[in-house]
Length: 190
Image (cartoon, rainbow, N blue to C red; front, side):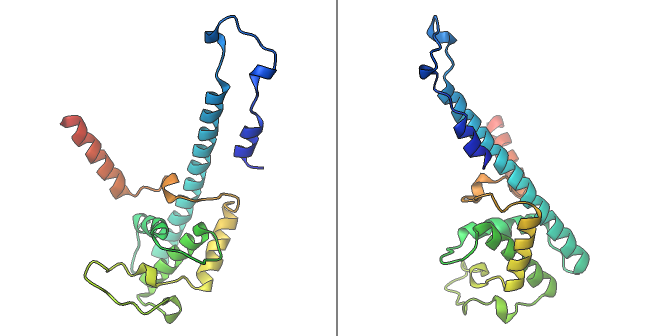
């Protein structure tokens, strides 16, 4: 049973409990507290999940950089992971998290081995114009990438987390954090 479900079961209806207050200021609005607690639980789960994903990506980055001459950065792997949500994924038979981790594995191999194998090619790509240089939608992780992704999910206990929106996670890259700081500082000065 998830923490979210447990929190919902803890809801108490004071109106039927027989508790009487001498004035309204003594009464605690439990619906507001319940909403805050549920949001805190969601945030806590998102933070925990985010930390586990970052841990997986850090491990993949370190492993890749030890094995290959051509290096990757944690920011690159975060971008590949987050970029999965920008794809139009229809008909995939796995969780989007598993697909995202498989894409990270695929990216790592493609960078390290400096080649794109036929097993990754999903369709023949045709560039319409110069703006269409992101070729990632045209590549699909192979079976090995999905197996490794499933192993990471199982090892880190991510099976029970239902991730619908990557924006719920705390995966900002260093560049994004610096840009946010710069924007915030600019607002403070002006």
